[in-house]
Image (tube, rainbow, N blue to C red; front, side, top):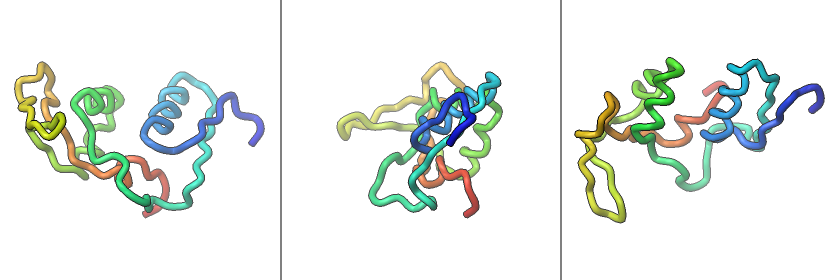
Length: 108
């Protein structure tokens, strides 16, 4: 690839978010992804946390993810349930959503 200011290796959640932020700043960016499809071997990410949903909401795209996932009022740490319903945010929950539904940017 030539002619891009930034090339990002990997179209996972972090790579896609970085590419989106750079594009909003006017930077010419390209993503290089080795996978040809959305299939993943094994489990990588199973959802989104409150702060991540807030950032997606700031960019106007949270509803795309919320419509595909399942909201849960509790999270876990080391198998211990944690109630996050009193977090000071309008997104005081976690969103159960597999990574294959978070990161895929091509046709189904």
